[in-house]
Length: 70
Image 1 (cartoon, rainbow, N blue to C red):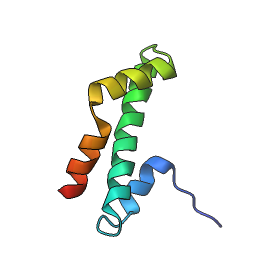
Image 2 (tube, rainbow, N blue to C red):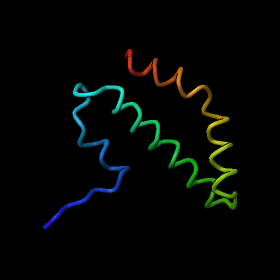
Image 3 (cartoon, rainbow, N blue to C red):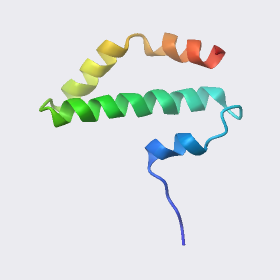
Image 4 (cartoon, rainbow, N blue to C red):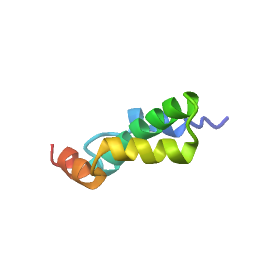
């Protein structure tokens, strides 16, 4: 029997030191997806919600690099 986790749960089972960039990418994607879902639930289109979330999030590459360094 195969056990397939939803993408959002995979981040909890990844060893953080194995590939920190991938772990950070998973974390950022998880938080962006959760906020997009929240805005869509409030009536925004998925495209509009994603644009707004990324606008509020800021410079994703800079955040990613800062988190990887930490």
